[in-house]
Image (cartoon, rainbow, N blue to C red; front, side, top):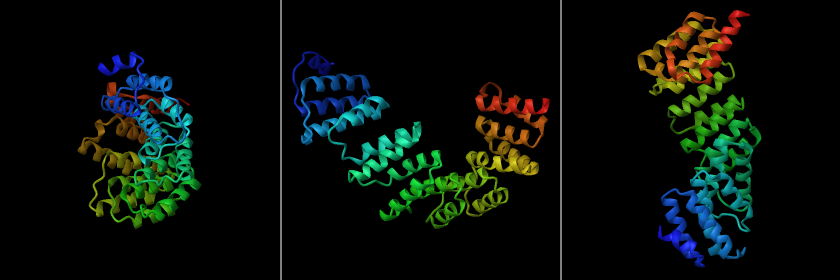
Length: 306
């Protein structure tokens, strides 16, 4: 490529040239090109903390690394930059990277660092940082972030409020989850599933089944994720009749072919000591068995033997 030839010539570029090269690398999602540009930039440009143009170039480099999932390189550039990014998009990418892949605490740390630097969160910031709070069951930062969302009047956004429901439910604050849920201007299937999963996770069988009924009265049809969310409550309550009903529903809807759904039903039958049905589900899954499927069957087998 022409740009590669020019870089190898060791010619010193202007910052505008570097930005254009980074834009081209971003379009092709080429981290390797970005690394060459990064090295050339280090060799040929002395950074100045008050150089706005230089900082814009560094922002583009950080964004390229994050877009290419080169987290280590992105973090290295971020940590060594005298001036941190001003664009909320880059902060959102950093937070999302850690919220999805861990360590989750880093996502929360980046959120607070962003606030310290006067960067205002967007409606896209809150769902991703709340996901990290959910993963850690970190209720205190979760509540704090809820307050921030309220101040910016973003707490009523469907994605933000659904993330709040999920966070409160996973942290065991079911009353708070329900308060947010009731106040939502509209509730989609994801919001209903978050509520159902929260009550199911904490063994609230009656409330879980009531939510399922309310969901359908609200003209929202359960999907495969709804079933996966309900099954732990059914298993814990040993409610075999409801478990069979869920199984039948999955067969009619075709959800039974989903390995995650099938594994959930297998686990439910096993915990209800309905061993024959559990084995049938296990055999049906066939070559698509995953580690969770095998683990569920192994635990069940050991339980029967012992």
